[in-house]
Image 1 (tube, rainbow, N blue to C red):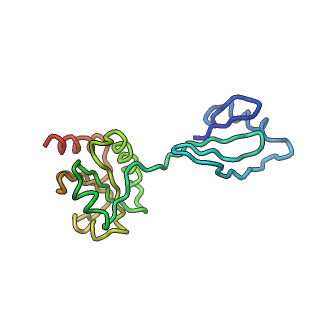
Image 2 (cartoon, helix red, strand yellow; image 1 turned 120 degrees about the vertical axis):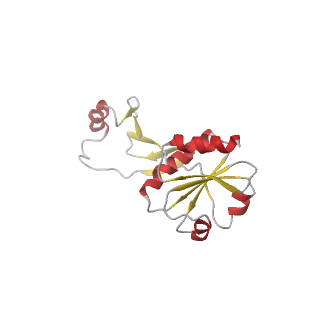
Image 3 (cartoon, rainbow, N blue to C red; image 1 turned 180 degrees about the horizontal axis):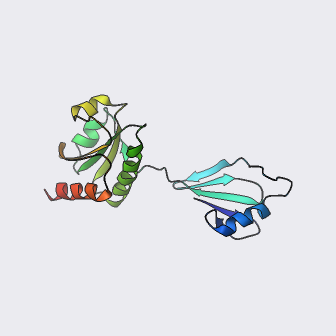
Length: 173
């Protein structure tokens, strides 16, 4: 979502009806129907500020920041097998639409269970050998490891509650 601030007005969102009416007043009349290039000025986690026309400043929240880290064949042993806490790993492919939904769930779980479990994602196209070792035939698949051993699996895109239930079972055992 983008929030706009005019130099002579208060902040507004494009979702509000008044924003649509306010935008033409912010853009000079000699630029009718012209789109201005928007370039990044500076970034900080979750917030990007872009340059825009002199009378319009754009603030956009970044929503693509992953909280679940990437694991590969080379880092598998140190991050998954040798972990002292349970590890949740999503096996995905970059072309897989349902995997994107699971990414969001993994990010939420990584944030909510920070310090209690570790969350990783593994691209099966890049690390096919690891996927074959765990007999991954389709994506998305989420496996839960405890003490380096697979203890739970969730196949396909499921509601967040399925993943939470698997985590709770693993933590209790």
